[in-house]
Image (cartoon, rainbow, N blue to C red; front, top):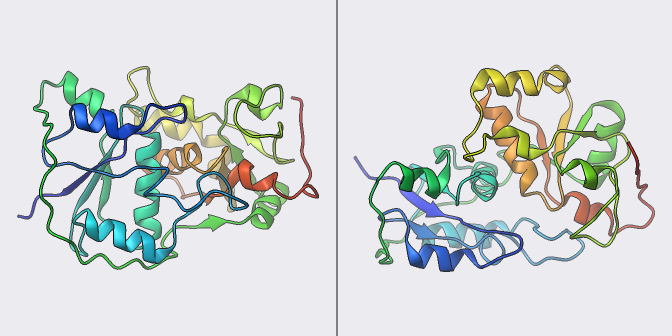
Length: 258
């Protein structure tokens, strides 16, 4: 049996670069992908973490050794936020056999499993990117879902209310959105809550036929998409551009307060 392709996507919004953590120690055989520079396109009107082109993503996955028949495992430091975004992108570009290591590198180390520092030699894969494998929202779609369905804002409550905005130039939220912070998907060790608890957490939105999720730039929201999929619930559509895209058009409305 061919071993899975293991991709280390450790990343933090405030740094340091995940590559430093990878070089210090990673799962044996794991390859590294940087969220900012490898997994995303150039920031701009599309937001801080827009999708890469299909051509660029295909080239990246081939360089990392991913082929059509590869099983892929993605992991990060602990809470599976960047890993969920990598999972979502692989699924969006047509690769179905992809999993997230629950608890990430921290759980691996706690289990006493071996780590490595050498960068493995990789045989190029034959991955072909086929966009459209996961539901995705544009800004107009997000406004529609907020008005007629359920649009989940997964940011911290104070950002949702517009009391603070540590990253983007405008504070607030998309009018009509509801707040279910990503942090509530996992326990203190970064591992996902059990399936029944997740189902209970999302019970207020699970029955809607039109559900979407957004955050600051489409990374944390992917975590909620994964959590709902893990719980066996209908997969919400991801607004990849999220708040950092929404605010590029000053005509779009902004809500604040409780």
